[in-house]
Structure formats: C-alpha cells, structure tokens
Length: 432
Ligand code: NDP
Image (cartoon, rainbow, N blue to C red; front, top):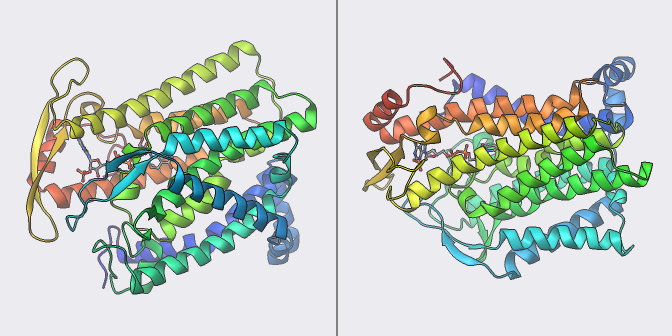
C-alpha cells in the first residue's frame, strides 16, 4: 500500500471525488457567472428542474475556435519559454541529489505576452472579447485536453522519465493523481512544469484579467472602478509572480509535488477558470465603488501582495546567502538542521526563525489569502460565488500547511521540533 499523508480512505475519497467533480465544477462556475448572473440559487434551480440532463445540456462542446485559441496561446508561450534569453539559474537539490537548471526568462515572457495581447486588440487584429464569448468552449477544450496531457505525462513517467527523480508508488490512481516525475522535460531544455504552472497557468491569469476588462469596456464603453481595482490587483499579483519566478522554482509546487493531475491539471484548467473568476463575475456586474473606497481597497491589496512577496523573498535570500544576510535590519536567527537524502547522504539546511518566518509557521499564507479577498471585494456582497476562490484558497493553504509540516517533520526530525518550539504560533491554530 502506498504511503499517504492523510488516512488512506480520506486520500482515495478526496482524489477520486476531485477527479470526478472538478471538471463539472469548472463548467458550472463559468455557466453561473456568465449566464445565471452569478447566482448559485438560479443554477441550483436549473439543476433541480432538469437533473443530470441540465448539467449535460449546459456543457459547451470544445469548438474549433476554442482549440485554435488554445493552440496559438500554448504554442506562443512554449516558443517564448524556449527562445527568449534569460539567466541560467539552479533549482534546489532534489531528494535524489539532482539539481535542475532553468532559464529565467519569465519577466520577458510576461511583458511580451501582455504587450502582444493588448497590441492585437489595439491594432484591430484580434479582439480579446472573442475569448470571453467562447470561454465555455475554451474551458471545455481545456478540461479534455489537459486530461489527455496528464495521461501522456503518466505514460512518459513510466517509459521515458527525464531524471532519477521519478518512479511509481505502485498504485495507478496515486501515480496519475500525484504524478510520476518531479522534473519532466522534453529534450534537455523544455521543462514541462515551468510550462504548465508558470507560462500557461499563471500567464493565463493575467491574460484573462485583461480579457475581462476589455470585454466590459466593449459592452459598456467604459470600465467600472471595481473592475479596474480587480484587474490591477490581479496584474500586480501576477507581475510579482513572474518577478519572483526563479524563487517559485524552489517552492513545494516545483521542488516537492510531482507532475500529475493535481498540479498540472490544476494549473492548466483550475487557474484560468477558478482563479480568474472574480473578474469573470465583474464583466456583467459593473459595481461603482467611488474613488475613495476603490483606492482604499487597492492600497490594502497591494500591501498584502507586497508582504507575501517579502516573506518569500526573505526565505529565499536567507537560503541563497547561507544565512549571511540581514533580516529586518539584523543578522537572522536560525536553526542548522541536518537531514538524510533518499540516497543516504547527510546534508544540512537552514531554517529561519526571525523576520516574517519568526512570527508564525506559514505566516506567508495570511497575506496571500487577504490579497485574494481584496481583489474580490470590489464585487461587494450581492452574490456569494465571486468569493469561491477566497474560500478555496483558504482550504488549499490549510491542507498545504499540514502537508508541508508533515513533510518537514519527517525530513528534519528533532530540528523541526526545535523549530516548532522557537516559532510557537501557527496560522491555523490546532489544525496541525
Ligand atoms: P514555501 O515556499 O513557503 O515552501 C515551504 C518550504 O520552505 C518547506 O517545505 C521547507 O522546504 C522550507 N521551509 C519551511 N520553513 C522554513 C524556514 N523557517 N526557513 C527556511 N525554509 C523553510 O511554500 P509554498 O510553496 O506553499 O508557498 C510559496 C508561495 O506560493 C507563497 O507565497 C504562497 O502563498 C504561494 N502559494 C499560492 C498558491 C495559490 O494557489 N495562490 C498555492 C500555494 C502557494 P525545505 O525542504 O527546503 O526545507
């Protein structure tokens, strides 16, 4: 039996239900936002009246235009990833002792993507409103296409793994869901997780935020201040992401989670549909906040995004300089923790116990959740659905905090215990 973090029943039940329910949820969310005024009650009535048929009837077919849009976008992003220049950076040492090498050209890819997209609209070559009009077929094509992509990843993991950081746990469902390879690549240079997580998933977040703004402009001849606050905060967040992309390659998504349904399908489908959903809602709900309230929300959101960025920066700077940096103007306090790799080698890592990281364990998740609240609250409180992402993110980060705590406890043993004694508070009291 494969080892699982949660009890096996919970693990299998949650994996199977997520595999079965997430695609339907994506379509229902889009349908409710775009066709049912964002009202869960209206969609519920429809499903109650028509049952499963109702759900089947609202499923859009993946049309030729949807495939064309996805293909052009995916090919453009893959080409930018391969061709744009960038510094060579090394990822963290993997459990089997490998060290992946990347080309850090995320900011360039981001600038080129957004400039090209707005340029296509400005010069009348392609209207982003078309993307909004075909959003249902695009999500439908993404759902099917990404599922096939994950099957191919699973097969690749078996027949042609890119490195020794791969392998089967002996259970098909877990292998498919959690993935086989940590760093799958096509050839030597095309890193699949950089493509799925960063250049397709995170980039689509910015592209769709711009799309929703342009669609509202095309509909009303102006953009509401609520939409402006939402789009600006989402773009600040995604800009921060690409600015820090090389740091992201040191986080759990890349360094610990293997390339399977959970991370790849999530980034290919869930990010463009669920993460962007507050903006999707605002297209048809142009709330006017007034300048003062709009500025308050904007400033609060930017502060939260900055704090989240600074937490990540602090940890990475601390690790990069081997603890020889300044944290909040002082030498950092730390624990030198040793651990054993899967090949039996003993290595050491530093755990930061001051700065943001001394306030509470996983403190950086607090500003992350608050940021998402601030780009959603311009929708005010007429409907619950725009807040789905905030709630989902809170649950995701609770679970992540537990998974990470368990992993660090088993990796560092007594040093993690010491860390928990020094940093007593946790952001989720009593949960882990
Ligand atoms: P982190 O980047 O915080 O990585 C956690 C790892 O950091 C641990 O596994 C451990 O790795 C190391 N670590 C733990 N404690 C310390 C310490 N005290 N000092 C130094 N290193 C430590 O986690 P995430 O990947 O979860 O988060 C990265 C960013 O991504 C955050 O900003 C988060 O908010 C964001 N995020 C956003 C999500 C979204 O959907 N919007 C989802 C998830 C994350 P090691 O083995 O190297 O010791």
